[in-house]
Structures are given as structure tokens and as C-alpha cells.
Image (cartoon, rainbow, N blue to C red; front, side, top):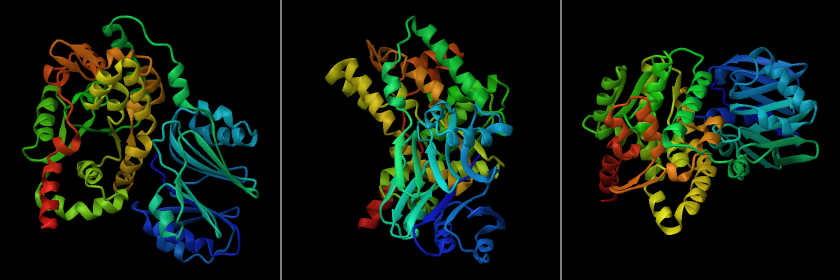
Length: 456
């Protein structure tokens, strides 16, 4: 469930509601029905204007679209926790918190960030991979937290930090305490590698992906961000085999490689595809808006976010609110050209270290940026390749099966290509080269021309 939230705990007599309003007004998310918890009382209002009409004062405040109440305490949960039954999910979380056995929370399976208020204390937590952002700030007024960095800056906080994946932050009368629940990265380094043939290992990987997709697709009306490349094609094929009938989504210039390839592969797979065809004028007009949404002005970040933004616009047009994304496959299966250089410089041991390092930075480099684009379109993302069971499976695969030395050169994401063959995928998918979205969509070429014109 897409459920961003904001909250504040005051240290002194300040207008808490005014700070919350400043945060919400700066958000790229379109707030509609709001739930506000202030010092033990729950209020439901329509939109930010509805909050503005409340004459409330208090010390502790939490606000989101949906707040859940349990025995006088409250939680805002952004995302999903799959291994807790819905009817007991909130109660179980509070039980873990009240028992002060935070370490057991490492067993929570999901994509989430949440804030719990109980006994006057705030507990914040983020999932082990960091698929859902969570930011914290403080100054003389108090402690603030939110799903977006920009809202804390808009409320006047200057030192904003991202809560690290699988970390807990507790705000109580003694201040702010932050600690790691457990280290997924350390666990990945201790996993025993698979043995067997490439086909046997690829079969294990495919079954792990299938199980993850079953978990992720209990709802109907599923979209897949689709370029016709290896990662997204495997997801689309597995979903189709499961009877999910996914809607494929692609954005790019009319004659771009991504659009042409996505159309062709969708036809070969017998799946419906929805194309958002971009032009130079649209790209130029949208540039400032994208930079504002993602809170970054780096041209590369903007060019990556541009096709995502328009693909999600297309998702809204076809009434989708949930899309699956191939994010993470390059980092865990060695999809980038730079991994070839790492292998040449330091062998497979160095390559393994590079994959672990890139995976550990994925949340801050890509996921936090992209999540702002999902928020701006009110579309919830899901990441099959970043499901913890899939990640653990991936890091049990020998690196030699990820980047394969062959007579004709290197085969990047080799094990995924073997998996695609086992699925009976066409050669156009099995042998598809890696093409970054900013290049495949044609956006980068147009952006460079626009920026060059601006400089002159």
C-alpha cells in the first residue's frame, strides 16, 4: 500500500500542526483523505485544506492517508509486510515493540517503512533493502520524520538524514536513538554458494522469482515497466505463466530502441503493451518538474526519471495503481559494463565485492530517487528482484555464473540469460544487450541537445 507519512514530536511549545502543514504542502504526493493522530486523538479530514481548518494543539503528531489503531497506539505503514496476516499485522507489530524484542523484526518479510507511536514513544523502521524511504531531522523545535526529504527541508529543518535500511530509530524523552536491527549485507557474505550446472541454478532462481511474484501479485490489475530487455521480459513472462495478465508499460521517443524493442517483444510474448510516445517539447517542458520531484538536478538522474515519470502517467491512464519494476537486477546479477573492468583488474573476488558494494548503495543511489516519482503519480512500486528471498538466492549464485567469460567476450547477467532460455523466451530476449533507460528511451540525446541550447 502506498501510504507516505509525516510526523513531528516537539521539544518545546511550538505550533505542531503548522509544521505538519508545511511538510504536507511541499510534498509531491497528492494528499486526499488524511488521518491525523495528535496526542492520542484521531481526526479524519479531506485534504490539506481540511487539516488547515483544525484548531488543534499538541506535542506529538502523525499524519498519513491511513493510520491503524491498536490499544491506544497508532501506526503509519508505508508498503507491505507479507508474512503477517492482515487481521493480526498491526497487533503483531505492537507486540514486538512492547516486548522490546526489536531483533525479531528482522524476520519481517516485505517492502516497508513505518512509524509507531506507543506510550508516548516513536519507533521508526525501514526494510532491510531500503525500498521505502524514511528521513529524520531535528532542531531546537523537536524531531520530525517523513517519507520525503523535501518536506522536512520545507519545514525549516536543515540537517536531514536518511534512516538506513534495516535500522530502527526510537524517539523518547531521552532523545533520539538509532541502531541496526541486523545486517543483511553481512548475511549475504556468509551464504554458501550453489553447486550444480547453470541450468540447475537458473531453475532454482526461477522458482524463487515465481514465489516472490505470487506474494507480490495477490491483487488484480498489475502493470510491468517494460523495455523488452532481459529483466522486465522475465518478469512479464513469469506473470503471464501465473495467469496474472500484466499490462506492459513503456515510455520513449517514437523511434527509440526501447519503444521498438518493447513493441516487438510484447507481440512475441502475446501481451498487451501501453506506449507513452514522447517528443522533444514534452521533455523540455517537464525537465524542471522532474528535477523538483526527485530533489536532484543532476542531468543523469533527471534523464533516468523522465521515462519512468511518463510510463507511470500511462499507468494512471489505464487505471493501474500497482507496477512491478526490474530494479536491482543489474546490481545483483552483474549487468553493468564496469563489472567487466572489475573482473579484469581483480578477478572474481573483486567482482563479488563490487556487487555487494553496489547493492548496499542501491537505496540511496536509485530507490530513494525513484520513489519520489512513484509518489508524484500515486503509483505503488514492487521490486521482484529485490525481494529478500530473491536477493539471498542471487548472492548464493557463484559470480562466475553472473559474468561469464566466453570466446566472443563477456556474457553479463549470464544466469538470467540461462533462465530466459529455460522459459522458452525468444533469442531477442535471451541475447538482449544492456541498454540503460535514459539511452534506450532516447531521452538522454534530447536532453543533451536541450542543455547545450540553454548554455548557448
